[in-house]
Structure formats: C-alpha cells, structure tokens
Length: 370
Image (cartoon, rainbow, N blue to C red; front, side):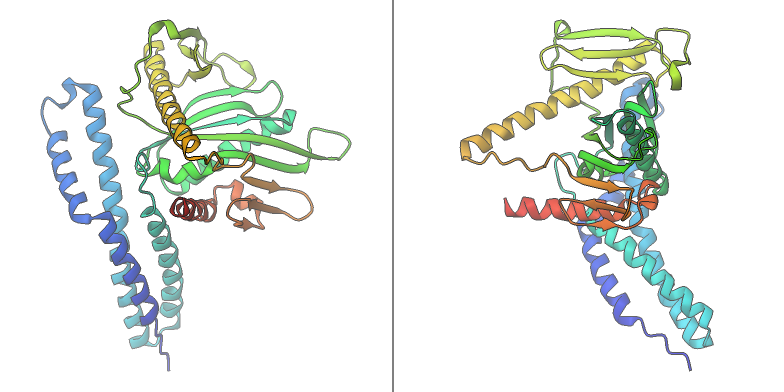
C-alpha cells in the first residue's frame, strides 16, 4: 500500500515561504501595481516618454515580483493535492511526480529566500554588466566571450530581458569588452556578487605547445540609474568621439557614425554605446551609464574615507573571486564562499544560481560581521 507522507517537508516549505511573503509584503506590492496601472492607463502618459518608460518599467517589475510569489503559493497548494491523489489512487507515477515537484519547489523557495537578503540601496534595480578581458592574450579575450555567453544563458534561463549595449571585438578570438543590461527586479543585487576578477586555467586552444594557459577577465556590475541626476558633469569634462558600429572581424554593420564613446577626462572613465540606431540615443544611454559610474565612485570614495577614519581600510573583495579549471580535474570554484561545481560545461551554460546564492549569503554574513 502506497503511503506518501511529505507533510513535514511541505510544512517546512510553507514556514519559509510565509517568512518570504512577509518580507516581500505582497499587499504593498499589489497596491503599487494598482497605482502604477492607473498611471500607465493615463491618456497623456506618452506625452513624456521618459516618465512613461519609468512607469511601465516599474509596473513590469512589480508584476513580475508578485507573479513569482503567487506562483509558488499555487504550486504548494497543487503539490498537496497531488500527494492526496497519489495516496488515494495508490499511484506510483503521481508519487514520483510529487517528489520531483517537492525538490523543484525547495530549490525555487531557496532562491526566493536569497532574494529577501537583497536589501541594499540599489539591489532592486536592473543591472548593467561590463566584462573586460585581462592578461592572457587570445585566451583572455576568448574567456571574456565565454563569460558573456554564460551570463546571457543565465538570464535566458530566468526569462530576464537582456540588451547588449556595446561590444568591442578582439582582432583574434573573442571580445575585448562588452556591456549589457539585465532588466529584471533585483538584477543588480543578484548579479553584484559576480563582480570581480575571474580566472580561467586550461590547455590553450590557440597555442601549439599544449601548455596550460591562465587568463583573466574582470566583471563589473552597476545598477541602472533611471535618474542619475545627482551627478552634474560639466561639458568640458567630457570628450565625445563618434564612430561606426562594427561587428565581428571589424565588418561595418552601420553606414553612419552613430556609435558614441564618452571619456570623462578627470577620472578616465570611458563608456561606449552602439546598440541604439541614432547617435543621439547612444549618447543619452552612454551619459546615463557614465553618471551612474560617477555616482557610485563618489559613494565608494566616501565609504573609503569613513573606513580610513575608523582605522579599517581592508578591501572587501580580493583580486580573484572565482577560478574555472578546464584541464585535469574539471572544476569551477568560488574562492570567497567555497562553493564549487565539478561540471564547468553546465556553469558556462548559465547554471549560476548556486554560485550566486552562496555569494549573496556570504556577503550578508560579512555585512553582519562588519
């Protein structure tokens, strides 16, 4: 006789989910959706395109947040029904399905629980990610492109909208750098733990000596600041260069000088944009990213000064945060959290949730200790 008893497991999940629901504050989210829906339905909304974009984006984010919570609640209810059905019908197939769904729900709720730890000032914003190749020649530029695909696949798995804003292709393999936007709730808080230096060790496919090659790539993650107006940038501090957008191999993909590169002369910060169709749009997008980077730079300098005055100037991130080994023992290991995977292929295919969750929990513990 089949007796599928998962009551204790479901009770534990409901307890955790109840805590998550309380932190998310579903009633407040629903109120925000109602308010934003009313604003989005205004007949004159698009008279101000910038404001309209903010309203519709905020509404989309809130709806996605509510959907994640309500779907989990429904799945918990459905799972209990499935268990009752399996026991009543003594159906092994239904019992197997219930066990599989329990494991999936456990993972989903764990991911939601991690999100409740994202309480930083900008954590709920969309993210702008920049990847730059480092030391290692063709291996490094190839590695940078591997990381780009990894993050794009991760976003695809979660159905997060992504827009590649700029890519600089290497003369040989891969890319020198790329910048892309992940437009999803808490994208910045989630991906910010990916910032740092990534290291790849493998037998180089570009050499003939079959020697192990170590290469590096840097990942930068900043929040998308829709209103980066706290930073006033004098025109004299910016050099503007325009050029034609290009694709792999330098082949022209645009017959006008629509791409824009902004250089902030006092800091040396460079921002390039070529995704939009017009020079005006690219310049506006580049200026927004530049303002965000300058705003964050100001905050970092203020934080560093406070630490100096307090006698604590210890950096919170090391030069190397994760290593990818593609020779001998296949392994990806995070050097901060100790989290690792023995299947680099799946990691490079976007299976990053375990690393990201471990990183968020690690950062929360560090913040609590500080």
